[in-house]
Length: 156
Image 1 (cartoon, rainbow, N blue to C red):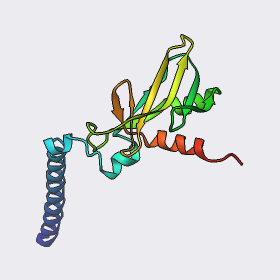
Image 2: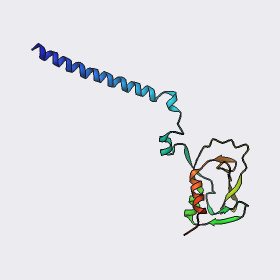
Image 3: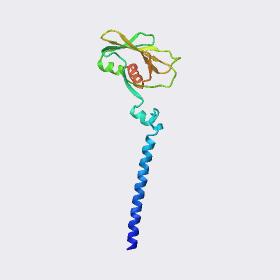
Image 4: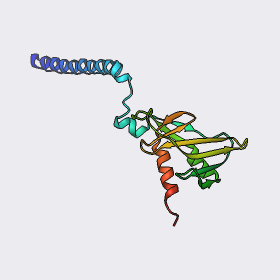
């Protein structure tokens, strides 16, 4: 009889030990996740890259855009986009930060959007740095880079 009680006591002791250990792990995890080092976003982390956490949606064109002109290196109109899908692809972007200084960067006009009011809005690019600018605000956009590469590919 005593051995049965000892076995039951040992089982109870093991179960309670596991519960206390699990509770300690939960408390530790909660404190670690609420620490100041976890509150700052890790923009270079894999999870941030997968979810696009460091990028924001941005529409640089006027609300009633009727056409977007793609400019060549010398400022002449190379292509004009008039279909809603093409306009949307060039105007609605995911933008993010960049790590280059902008004080020494030279921008050239790249895209010009016209709304129904007729006033153009220009998007500029610094070729050497891969940074774009609209109305004085610089940003990086891999999505816009891909869009521009698609425009530059010859049609088959």
